Image (cartoon, rainbow, N blue to C red; front, side, top):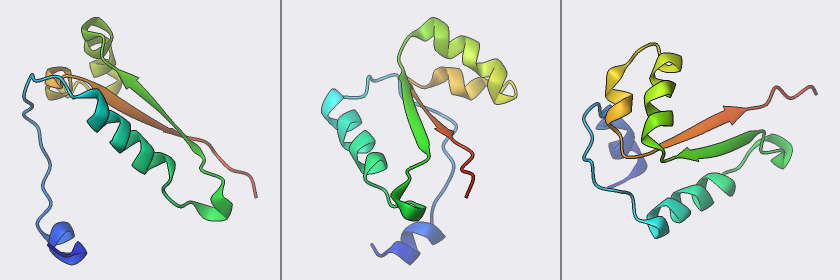
Length: 85
């Protein structure tokens, strides 16, 4: 499947399996994010992985009360930095 087809057929998932994410899969996703290109290679982002069920539940409030977020087996939170050029 080409990039255009992936973009054209993408969809938002709001229902999650409760299966844990294998560590090797999580490492691959984090590595892909780490090596993603950015302007001047500044990579103005940080990623936090949350697996603690209690903490995931409390994060729902920061997600405009989108309850489906609490159903995910883990969260990967991306935070960007404001870069002054």
